[in-house]
Length: 176
Image (cartoon, rainbow, N blue to C red; front, side, top):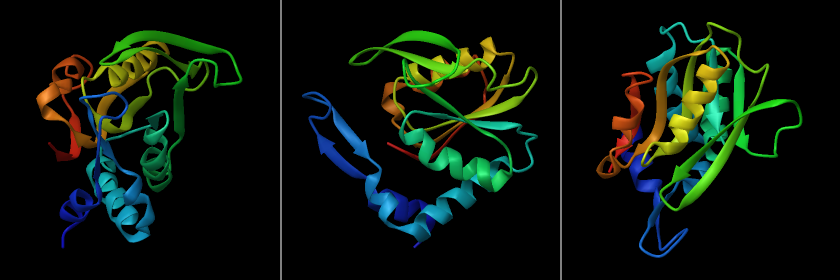
């Protein structure tokens, strides 16, 4: 079975989470399959290894899982973007609206060097609000968003439309 089919088979639907009417795409079953995790990481590495990327930015918290593996395999820095109040050093903040509330994300003010080419990684692209907030934080520090990397794209929510103004390179391993 190829990697994408294995990935699809491991994603679990959780109905009514985090609120009624939402079907949450749970990637945690993937994490119990170390071989599949290696295969997913290698698929992402192949897509980015020749793109002159200086850092991978991972969005809290599930974006840390494969974002860190991707950065490690590319031998480049990993930069976390976290919810407000979670980073210990001076930060730059961005507030935005979600499909079920609002949030504020932060990045350390010294996490990205001016001119760095960055891939922003998260587990899932829904409406694009969180990834857009990450792109705005990268831009605020003088970085260039070279692309976005996701395991899953919920295409019916049209998140890509929001992100194309930052980069036309929006990649997901699987789409629903």
